[in-house]
Image (cartoon, rainbow, N blue to C red):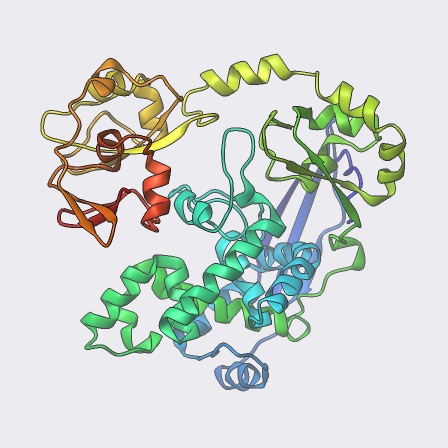
Amino acid sequence: MTLRCLSRYRLIVTFGLFLSSKFVFAQTFIHDPESDSLFIPPLTYEYIPDATYNQIEKRLKNIEAAIPLNFNERVKSFIDYFTVRDREYTKMVLRRSTYYFPIFEEILAKHNLPDELKYLAIVESGLNSTARSWAAAVGLWQFIYYTGRTYGLHADWYVDERMDPVKSTEAAARYIKSLYNMFGDWELALAAYNCGPGNVRKAIRRSGYKRKFWDIYRYLPRETRGYVPQFVAITYAFNYTEEHNLILDDSEYMYPMATDTIMVKDFLNLSTLGSLIDVCDEEMDFLNPSIKRKAVPQSPKYFSVRIPSDKMGYFNEHRSAILDSASKTGKKELEYLARNTVGSTYGRDKVIHRVRSGDVLGRIAQRYRVRVSDIKKWNNLRSNTIRVGQRLNIWLLPNTYSSTVAQKKPTKTQDLVVDGTKYHIVQPGDTLWDISKAYSNMSIEKLKKLNNLKSNRIKPGQKLVVG
């Protein structure tokens, strides 16, 4: 499948029936929305080869890999899943891999990382660039907001670079490298990518300070116990597609196309741009998955927009006229939605509110001049129930703090000066917000930068540079 405008046949439903351990019969119904009719191809079947435990173990040993591919019954159960029970899933990611793997391979090689790490994105997202988990992890590499921001991935109402294949892979490479440097073991680095380094360290302590994945296996979170085995299973399946009859026709693969990048600062409507250079909406969306609203906002910084390389000549010839037209369509409507949609973060700064005794969502919303529905959306709350000590993400519009916040008595300063550097000693109940208001020309971001803070978490007794 090329990346030009896709067929009008939108809905494909396949029913499969296993009649033995070696064959699966499948029937496909293809729906044509224009004629509202179904096309039913002939019934097909495919052969599913058997593979013994010893055969799989031997094949795994023959794969050249820097990351250990340990084999046991747990790994075999996932191999059976990908090669027998859910072959359609494996074929789907095989199709997508032709497009994404060249991107991964180039970036992994640049960072001197093992090539087989490209299979990790399948475990993470099934090679779906817009995938979103229950925990609000997003993209091919499933970054949560804080981790993505730490590694330079911008996310707001209009754009989420966690869904950009190139930028997110670059961030993932840097993060994985840092985890490997932290643990000195690839399996532990993969486990930490899934559950966080803190949980891996906890498992190491609980195991008696053992430092191999399978030695700390039972002390890891349930999801992580299946994470590394899935990685091994996917690596195996991709290296032995022929042996398991996981063969696709050339027409089924997603072949990449050459693209060029346009850098823009002004508002730009993606659909209008596409229509003016004769590229359909589906193709523009596919090439620009990080642009969530089919538009990029006016901004002091540049945003990148990808178009097919064969359209770049025409674009350059008519650049001014095209950008002028694409900068007007839908601008007012989207700006209104950006500021008023429940849970929008566009143009806002994030602060963390720690719930204290007596707090309720209504009072917190009034304090920060936001809506209760916004707070619930930002924090994935299904009810109004909150607990003491809970951290709530609050996104504030600049200069719109409530009188409660503005008039709040600044935190009592506890200062220490060492070699000309002024420090604030964190007191119980202090937040970065409170501390920033206690010192002139200080902001939360400046505080974090001065103290190399990766999050808003601070603890009593901690020394923070304030001048």
